[in-house]
Image 1 (tube, helix red, strand yellow):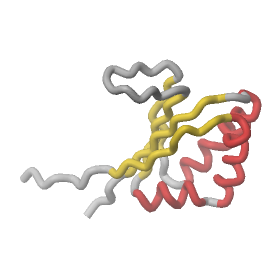
Image 2 (cartoon, helix red, strand yellow):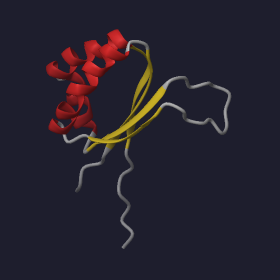
Image 3 (cartoon, helix red, strand yellow):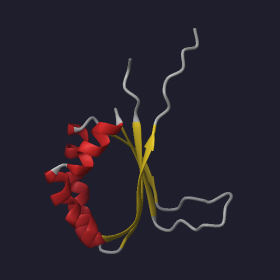
Length: 106
């Protein structure tokens, strides 16, 4: 049975670019160490429906499994690095989204 991927959706507002850049510089090596893949980010997303405003940047990335995502988040090196994110942004949310179990189509 193959692992089910997990996705992360981050929504944050950058308030101190210099502090956030420190976070960005260390982010990708740690993400890759846990099998993570960066998809995209958007500072000017568009809400097509709904009443809840989402402010700031949306960031999407993927892990090979829920456990890999949680291991990344709880990693001591990542938590130390995330202090730069905390200093440079207001985090609205970091959401773990579970992938779907592959269907047997045969």
